[in-house]
Length: 483
Image (cartoon, rainbow, N blue to C red; front, side):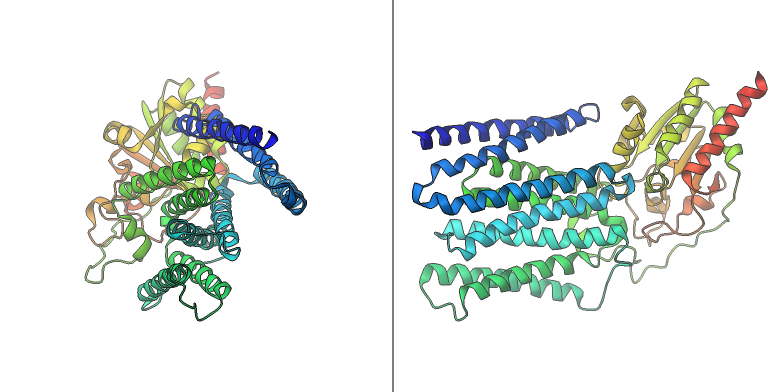
């Protein structure tokens, strides 16, 4: 009777958890409800984890003593992992959020791969479908794990420039095909009775080794400008791996959560690739930042003109309309609070102020939206590229803070540029542009920005937060002088 009650409780909780995942994801689609959506999905996850302990009552009584050890280990693992994540999550800086998301996503892929490893080493994967799905989850999870670790290392600065060498794509292809071949051989020998030549455990280790190696090789040559898309891709991979292993375990909550995450990650990846006017294959298998071999890079004419922060602040105070384009430099300087303080001064002076967000601004999907939300910027002031791009031509002043490729007019005019054809924010079409930048030089992607040399563009060099403080002081000084 206890076993039946436990089965019913598990099934009902899994159903409720799946609903909470979907409902939470729906609420995450809007900045106004995203926080509550995360909490709702979190409740679903906690419920799914806790109810899994009821499986102890559905197992044969003779096997329960051995299960006690596993239950203790599970509780210890949850305490250590949950405690560590809680502490790190509360302390992590906004600039470190992309790498935190990357490494935690990699842990999800690793967990899926771990489930697959237990099934394979324990010889529990029986039947063609069961074995194939287990191997698919293992392959995708391992690739996501090792690839996410490399993405973390790039974002953290542990690894430098993209690693590229001759024959790299061919090597990647050979490793991937080899992983598929080993997996196919494992299925064939398991179902046909043909001797596997090497011990089964050896084949499993070779399979995982090739999958992990492919994730590393696939990510090493990818440039920093593509990191938002890469993070999104590995997020989709992890979701798919979790969904496959949910099928292996017969766990509906894992299947639904994994497939929802996988589908959402895939759609986000496609949308971001479209925002860069590139295919996903181009992101993964091309050397971003290198001009075409036959193309002659267009010459950038003019000089960068420097102005003072106070002059730029006063100019915006007397403008009728201002559009602000935030980039990673704003996050690096942790200047979002000072930016909103400056915006409130402009709004009080009856200046129309709006924020323009490019889909791939920052180093992970949605980073700029989160940054502004953290500062308390009202959602009705934040606009996406398609909704605001036509307004730049009639705007008095555009303030660009730490952004580079997303406002580079070379994307429209220079066919030799690696970003040619990428939709950009039309900041250069405004009457006046001010760019806050830490110093002269190229952006994260290594591409010279033609905007900085336009006659309507002035550079304000310095840390974004320090510059914004000077702008605030200049605008407040106007009020004090008037009084």
